[in-house]
Amino acid sequence: MKCIRIGYGHVAEWHEKKLTEEDVTTIGVIDIDENKRKLALEAGFQVFSSYEEAFKLKPDFWDICVSTDFHLDILQTIRSLDFHANIIVEKPICHFFQINTLKKVLENFPGKIVVNENYVSSNVTKNVREISTSLNLKPTRIISEMSKNRTADIRKGRFLDQEFFAFGYEGSHMITNILELGEEYFPAEIKNPHYGDMHITMPNGKICLPKQGRVEKKYISKSGAEVILYTSMAGDIKYYYPGPFSFFDKIVEDNNTRYRILAVEDEKKCMAVVGFYEPVPGLNRGEGTVVVFEKGDIKEYIAPIYDDTMGLSLKNAIHYFLEKRDNPCTVDMAIEIVELFHLLKR
Picture (tube, rainbow, N blue to C red):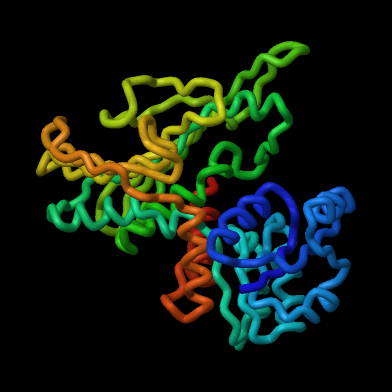
């Protein structure tokens, strides 16, 4: 298949790598940033200044890899040019305030749109869901934690989310993992969130980043289970489970160590099923594991589980375009994630 890629940043580089593995050829790049256009040219790509020019090459699909601010306008432009277009668009599909406009833009659109939310395709999440069902667990508590020490990233000038604060980086992934367990885990009663500041030593002294250190959001789901979403940019682990990680409560300041888990607990049965997302110590990148606990002891250890979430997500999108499977992440699903993300904003 042939694609036109819109945007030539970090996400685009990952898409190029993963889609090449699926025999996709990038026949052109569109980017309004002159420096990125030069980089794309240097990498050997044909660069276009307009969508009309790119459309003449008749791409099999369009791959949107720019920031959310531009998604709506780009979708509208592609729709006007290529009414039956196949489109991959990075999550989130749009901002909350744009949802109604997005629905109008895509009304009666017969093309295929896949929103690239990696964790929708996670085999770790799938295993957690299937094992919990096979054990007939009645979840009393569900925890999604995604923590990483981002101190070094911030020192280098990493973007800081001033709207959602610490929740803005991993929030949509955590929501996705919860929703993949079932619609019964939608919120029924939302509790007050708890934020923590982040303190970083910079060359010119210490600085405080309000609400950027950590956040914990809790709600009671429609099923009655308590749902906890926790993330820390300071690397402070809160919900530790034995298994692939030696006990620790603070993630080291590096690029490789992350603590990403999804836990389903049944208090009455004294059981828990916990998924560990990659990177996992002792496993290759793109491999995760699931651990089953009974009365605090490890009952079953399942590893490795192939879980290259981005690769799987993009592969599934291609197979959908080729009519080999259903849509892995529809526009409606993506809107649902945006709505819940906004609902949990307070």
